[in-house]
Length: 229
Image (cartoon, rainbow, N blue to C red; front, side, top):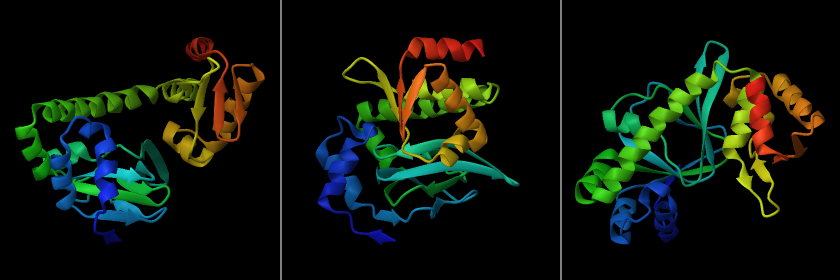
């Protein structure tokens, strides 16, 4: 489903980290040349092998990027509001090597790569930000390859440490706005394994779990324990 972008879409796009510092008229021009797509939960936005000529910016909702080989599905990234995906494929005009599926209703604004490259030609700050983003995607992909060699415990503790934010009381907290099934697929393990590792960390006093929120009682100790195996 598509709709004409509204004024608040310009505001939402401006909040995306790639556009921080970009003048409002340039952002408004990008929005006028695009159409917001509303994707229902569990619907596919990009299919494996699909042609990508625009960079999708997620204004609202969340999207999983996954690969499936036979019966094995691996979620390697969960995209949240304010972020983008498929950047490298759009630059290379290459087909997508993964599926992009909405985890909840998602509002996606695809910006044509030609428009983004024209902006990069005019705005050196944006050009640097775009290059940095592409480099971060490569580094993240290499990190995922390395994580595949880790034990399940190490994968979970490393993930928790990477997404945790310091709270006002000095503790570190990680919100898990996805189901255990999705998180397990993201970490490349079975749901039962994820539950078992979480229970063991709670029993050891490393974390507490309250529904979708994990409180890390000692972040340094958590990482040290994961490295120890």
